[in-house]
Image (tube, rainbow, N blue to C red; front, side):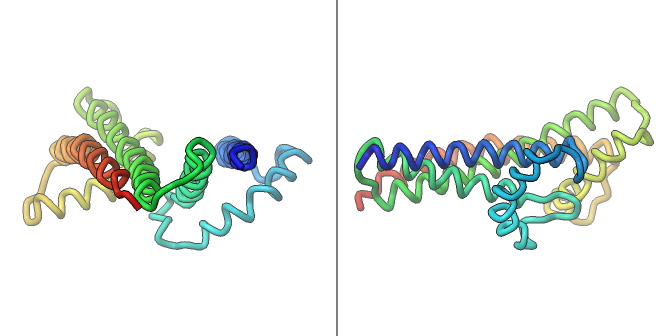
Length: 196
């Protein structure tokens, strides 16, 4: 039975690699570039990715988190299959721990991404870099909705300068990242201890 699970795991791993290649190609190529190989890749991966793309809550403005959700599901299934392959059985607690770990990893990847952009933007503001450069305008477009939410949550009626907003945003994101990681570790440990 473990041979079957290993085979399923290998297929899932290969499919996940194809998904990653497909996602990377959307960042670096035009729709009509790539030829026959890219067309085959689209036919193999697009039905799966499209299923997640239809959920509007996975999109926030210009950011589309549906590929991350698609990868999370594959990671959870792959981890379940690998656990079955290794131990021959799995508990509900372990499945819940695997789901929590995968969702947490994706969440902290996104928080880390916004934290990094906020820190880079804060450094650029402190050194006096031009704010009208297209790169900084793009960074501002990405991070400003998050910074606005943080300001609304913690500084309701106070108006912050952009510089102070960046510092407050970076501090909040860093706290969420590090405290959240500790809490997630505890939750995964608790869930995996569920005996059934």
